[in-house]
Amino acid sequence: MPKTIMTVDDSTSVRQMVGFTLKEAGYDVIEACDGKDALSKIDGANINMVVTDLNMPNMDGIELIRNLRSNPKLKFVPIIMLTTESQSEKKMEGKTAGATGWIVKPFKPEQLISVVKKVIG
Image 1 (cartoon, rainbow, N blue to C red):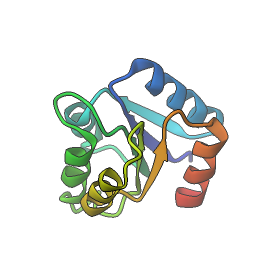
Image 2: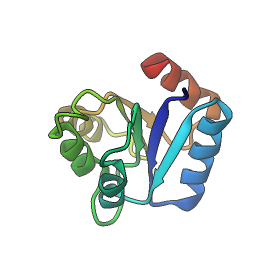
Image 3: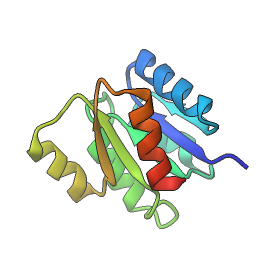
Image 4: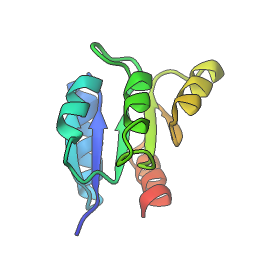
């Protein structure tokens, strides 16, 4: 049974590219346009990993991570930040909130797949 990855980004083109890359590698994908959308779709779903943007309307990536980490069922789900932000203070904020890793956009599809395979197989 394929593993399911939720991708959260307010950019439709980024969501499509991430989704396409992950589906090509054999993963199931659930897409969300921001943190609030992600939380509404994740409830009851069997998610193996989350790939989220940092800067989004309604609920940003840091707030989403905090919400996911406060849910006992999602506490240990790997979360990768996929963002244009590369400053170390933003990375620290993500790590403190509970992010597992960080990929800077633009990303190479093979780079994303390599990280996913390392984290969830």
